[in-house]
Image (tube, rainbow, N blue to C red; front, side):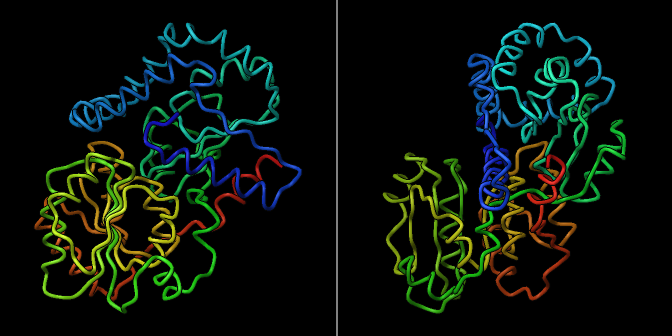
Length: 351
């Protein structure tokens, strides 16, 4: 499912690690929409609309279902899930897996029962791709949970998951975030020829605070390179291109397949607090300025980063500029954990 994107990158990281290091282990990355197109599309549209336009609605849903009694009642009232179980069963029977990993927990209550019925002995696991454990993760048929940090393990125990099922591994990210690199050589490759500090701003949402924030960063009294990546949002790209005056040390990118390289040359990364973005920054040891968190998992992710010293929450353009300046001159690294071996630890369970 493409809701949130982070769980897709986590699945791709597992697939990449297996391809490079475990040739006998074949991983097939399955989108829920391949099994049940209507259901997958429904979840995708609901997530996108509530997150982009009605974040308070998403926050209310997230908070409501984080109450164990409500989450349990929803799981027991599984008539909705039964509508799709037959098609899911047929798909699983055709695929005949030896194990199942969910990097998105939404389909787990629908897929796990027919999977267990058809293949009683195979292991099923969930990778939690945020820094908070939600009640919805408590799916009794799941054999193992892989989580980022001890705090997420505590969250899952609180909502009824057996602590013996939970392993702290970190969140899987692509191996390229652990590969060595030469920052100056990368800068030249990406068109930067000076020694100024670099700020990377990443957003795929056309929010009103972005233009004033860019102005604030460029006008904060010291020379920096500012790179803005729009995540393929054509509206945001055109708006910045038309309304933000060209600057010598400003680079505007609509979409790139080399975001990891831009992150590697950055001294500070500005963006939303998604679980995978945070984990990738941790792997690189990059400080973050966290903007526009949606109520729910992103807000909890931002709170985690503030506690561990790896990021600062900034809710408007002025706060973003101030936080960027402070982060550029902060020598403390905080208690940042990279989870470098997350993919290896997770896939060990299925060998």
